[in-house]
Image (cartoon, rainbow, N blue to C red; front, top):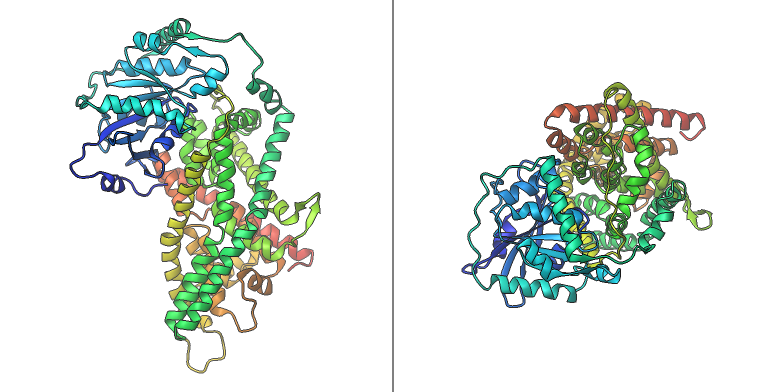
Length: 638
């Protein structure tokens, strides 16, 4: 997500109104992002810091007394010592070392009130910078429910900074923090000064800070008698080496079934809408190039991709809920042994699961992995995860060629095939990593897998809703820019040059697209691809889902009067099952996403690793499509 960087924020600042600059900083899983969402709501903008693919969230909010505040949500960090790219950015912002980001006037160090050890250590590090700050005890309601009593006044006196409680998931839980900010901002904040002479603490310094944090907890926090908590009872099942994996795969299976079954009704509505718009265009526009562009290029092209928005939102819904619930860290813990055998770090599970939505944020999420070799190994296999851009291709082909029937107990055959494609991507990623471990990193050793498991908590509907809104908006923005611009090119290639007068052949047979498709035929004929597929693969290099839009445009222009109206029916009439299966196999491995390759280049510092990903995925795509097509033909499906 790399749109809307600074311009919207400046537009939100009213001339003549002083806007305070505060930054949220804290450990991962402390509820910092939930607090940011509670403060800013929809008035937030997500971009990347210039030169790095580290997510940058900033937003505006207004306090109860009408003061405007610009808040920056910094990446999670355990220490200013900074071992990962995310932590480096967080450190550099509070030190004033990021040229594109003004030094914050005030810091809110967000802490998980149920577990203060690492948060207090970070607060002590930040205190040494001299920037005005406060400690925010988030999830204070959960701490009280567990019998944890924190003497905020004593802790504030010991730290030398204000301490305030908050409950980010409840509106009432924010009143104390907002009242504190109003009181703090009633007087002008001093102009911040960068800590030019700051030195990163060494191991001994961190140990001393941790001892001080533990002393403060002993003095200021009263812990309840040790009990068998709800989290421990749930973890007894979810972290079991056998039962835990069964639950994990069951969750993934339900997720992929839901992508197919839950989305059907809204997808039908979107399809009906674009069909109606096509009929409307035919009624009011004269037959000719303009009507062809609107109906065949825009509506059939872009519309054939927008229709998959419900499926993408369902997939993101599961990921956001599981992450908010606290399950993602458990899944990473469970998968550590499996991934370790394949040459991946346990922390790789979270980036790889994120890659189910899109490989780009998945690759960016590898910053949570400390070791460069482990981070690089995850980056190289992340594109094999079945991202949401593949969903339009899979859904189109499965819907056209796989019967819509139940296999057993309400398990749908189409959903089962979709699950199999996802599973094939996972197996391929583990297999490629295993081979690379033997060929490239034979002598490399894994860093130990250390992971702090957050307590379970109910997902925040507000945070999930904002996350879905942002991802849906990003998808539609992509459909309205990248896909739309590619459809203009595809429509032009399919429509020009004009056919001879009085020809009886379809006009597209004389087009530049047909010439390109036929020129590529000798290369792709062994895997069963026709010239229309060859044409669709070219714009699909910009983004995989563009291939569906390209097929919609090509077949819309070339369709005869007796062809079925919808793209799936058209493909079923023109393709063999062997061709359809070969294309599915191709897209399991296909490297067709220029944005992903560019992200790999930025994360690894050069084109060498991006080129390796492109080559090995292209070889796998062609080889798997060839085997699939030839085997299907041998069984009489050609």
